[in-house]
Image (tube, rainbow, N blue to C red):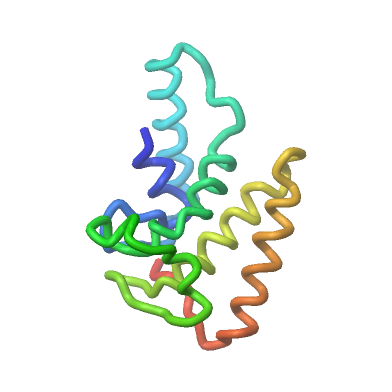
Length: 137
């Protein structure tokens, strides 16, 4: 199941092609994920996918292809350098993920501060790099 957590709402690519998925597609994928989870574990997911997406957001390794992961702190590189991997730059990916995590965690009592922090970080990035484009649809 980790592929869904890493590739769903947030453009956490399992490959080089990151896009912003439509809501109907995301709803179908989430339904399938929840059904499969229930089949495998006999229980429903605890907190939905918000916590999984928030956790993946913090992994800077998700900003580079698998062959380059665990070699350096890629999240730390964002303020100093942007790079392209497939369909989006690292900064585009991070801004997209911050927006999604902000929205997904907004209604969660335990994750509301993550929502505020994600929204603030996203706004700072957009202010610092105003020409940053959204990830492809």
